[in-house]
Image (cartoon, rainbow over all chains, first blue to last red; front, top):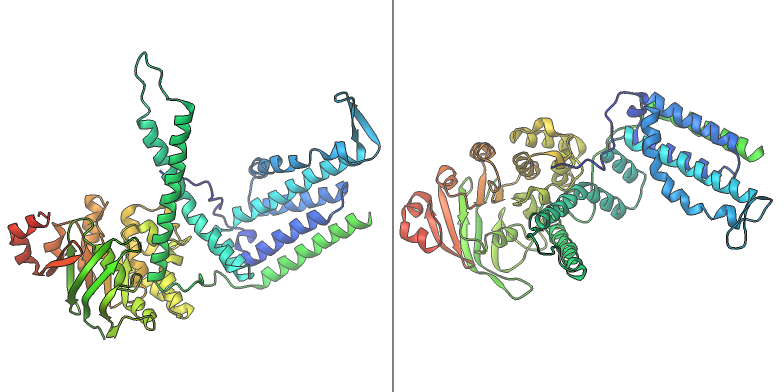
Length: 263
Length: 235
């Protein structure tokens, strides 16, 4: 049984695939920063940012449909802003006839729609990053960009063991299912309290197993000379094309930002 | 330059008070391949964890011409390649390359040397093409061989393996035995795979209850039915 739910990387040959992972990480972060710095309601800029996004996807041979499908994941988080149309003061757009009438303001609606679009744009760029860069290369880039090493170690080990943990949990659930039998004429399943206890013990057992595993992994690391610092070799070296693409993209982003701020 | 491994009167008590080793003594000559057999709970794995200082008990251990102490732990860990039973514990990096490079990188070797050693180690276990792979997607047999490569890349004096054939299907087991046969190194291998013992190891240690209860030529020990039965072993 194999689960691939964190492996988003798609093998490919394109300029975007070949870029240095550090440049890709920096450009992604810069793009997201630009998106968050554009003011509310600057819809012209959103269109330009979207065009830039699509241009990136197309030159990486990604189907826009794939990107759109994956980006739905941003929706639930953006819904946190759903109260804005009701709470931000401004010209009234409409009144909802509940609780004696709640008003929807225009300013609030613009703000809500802007947040929706912005988070959607940001998530899509992050999706492009992990689709065109192998995850170990992203980790290396973050390390090369001096992110705190414990943080990277945590992400790196999580990437390796998330699968293992998931399989462990699946085995536990399967063992329970295999013994969850019924007898004709007898109510099966036990009381809700009992079932809760069983589930709780399973979670506890998973936690204990993970704890023991972490001990064994740490021993395996010590045995090979670990002294508190994960080390890797360089994945790639910066080429002229990296500087070129990096500079051009940053300039485009700056222009869009200026345009949004001045307009 | 390879050295004798010498363990004298090693005693160890777990933090919970359970005594695991009661004065273990043995030695292994350079180039010798030695089997370590005995029932579960005999202290085999505990003993192995002592050989490069992960656990520290009372008694003396000489490895790589040094008496093991906190000061020379680094040298000792470079000299003893310890391979754990579960390859999922041994392979903790995102890619096979990172895992095999882990030891050499910690030894402070330069990048070119690290890359060469990784390639050599993977080639030695017949897994050269797996260098860019993610360990999660490999079979147990493949993982076991890569786990061995992760210590071969450190070029140790002695290979210490904990149940290398456990959980393997017959074909993967055969490949692993052939691999151990080809590796011209000093080895201490704990195992329950008794048919493998006379095939690979000139000498055998039998452990039970935290002690080495018998040591000697494999052919003699395995011929002694009364001894094997006494310690819950059979061929």
